[in-house]
Length: 180
Image (cartoon, rainbow, N blue to C red; front, side, top):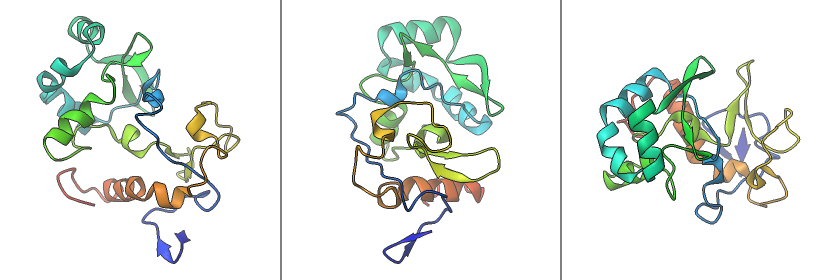
């Protein structure tokens, strides 16, 4: 798929018609509210290995939850366990993503962040097709304002270039330490 002659690194079915613009922090990180992202095995290992780095950045109630019950639930999405929610928010949400904050402090914003969070609002259908989550597309159930195609005039082909590059890079089997 292309826009202005620039080829995107990942084929995305509705990229030419979808619009999207992340407005964090103006939105308060609403995608972290009850989001419950799945965590792949390599991501789980990386988070577990570095959990002590994230704990000081958690909300007090979220930290208590993690210390008592852990940060993953028994719930499974796409074959992987999901991150726990406390008080209606991802346990790692605290005025932004603690994974991203710690990663940014180390010079790599996405270093610890689960791929499901990085790629949002890109999603993959059961048939393997990638698409931009938008109200009315593929029965989108989440009513986040940012998924409303009328919310932003910015073409998703422009605003999601980094996310598409990340997913293409991930699909090639490259490690997170390499740049896309």
